[in-house]
Length: 197
Image 1 (cartoon, rainbow, N blue to C red):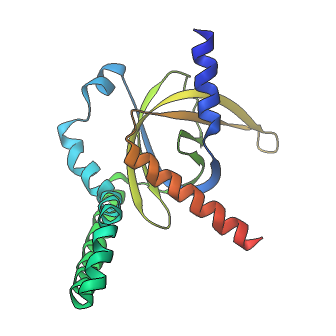
Image 2 (cartoon, helix red, strand yellow):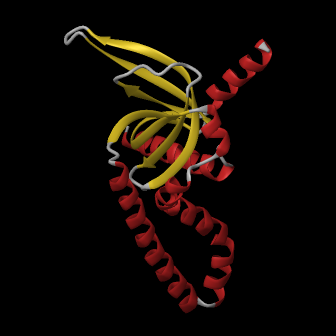
């Protein structure tokens, strides 16, 4: 058992991580709720939130075929590119709607493909399962995932005598497509940071 836990810890640390600002919403759920999946009334909101990221995944899959069309029929390729821009505008609108519905606001996080860490005013026990909704900026890629709390560390501000808690979570049952979106975002931010130095 210890060997399995050590292996999972090494795998979690193998993911590259960055400090970032993202829009984050979380809700603590029970194991039973996690096992049964999303509630019916949440499905439309999740669909709105993740539409842009799903469109982007489909566009990447279509790239090889688009290059063939572009080489043989530049006018058709231009038309398809314009349609793609219209769909992107529509998907951004739906993400904005979802963000408004959930009253989400930007906050500092530490993000990697395996999980994230964020600050909370209240402690959340290790092992707690939560539902996460994240919007990566500036792309506005919405992500829905389940996560499990792996640590909760108290930070005390001695000047104000107030406590906050650093909550670290590990993504649960995340699809490869969603993990790829996070990985590309993280690597893009790291490249941009290196370019500024």
